[in-house]
Image 1 (cartoon, rainbow, N blue to C red):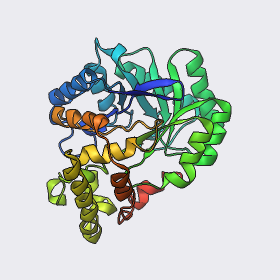
Image 2: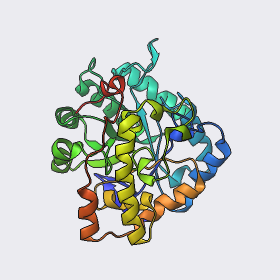
Image 3: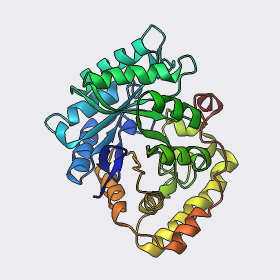
Length: 325
């Protein structure tokens, strides 16, 4: 496994997103033992960047990650996120990045994760009710206290990134980025490179679609959030299968899996990018991390980069309102 720097933070070239172990995806919470084995295997393979959030569950994913890292904490660069749970009484799903809520959230995450510090602490979504300067200042205080090492933002637009960074250095921005979600390339990515801020793409495999293994939404449990996702429904789903088939064709030529090709394309976009493909299975984490050794030709990169945009939005209308572009 190669390693890169997100600003001043060294991380594995490929990380691991833990959300699906406890939240949102088919099978979540059904086999915590396998999830723990997957986390342990990731560490054995050299993966250091482990990503979770208080909203996942809520809370149960941080608890799971904390159990898995017991006795292995020093091997991980532990990332979590605050701001999608209001601790002032409104509860999960309510944005709150006010200073008091930030502190309460971080204290809770430290307890659940069983650690005395968080390596990378993100604001999960931009809170329109709190100036980002106040949020950045609150995280800066936690950095000074040793409870947080580095500050990140998730799904933030250029203006918010600049304003936050002016108060406290932003180490990384986490946003959706993959072969079929490329909206940040025009406006956000140039700002990150100007300010020397790393990018951590989530859903780098298109929520599993780019692996080529999803051929029908009937494969999903009733509570799988992809059942309502515009890209997985109706004609959009059928049109998007062509993108998955193109990735499969390149994979066949390379002698790799579609997931490895999709990740290899992403890695080729810059040495300041560390994707966090999510899985709860050992075999998948082994497959995904092996993408670090896949090299695509210039022609293959051009072919993949020229794929048509995915049909349908990345989120439902309600979810999209929480994003800043």
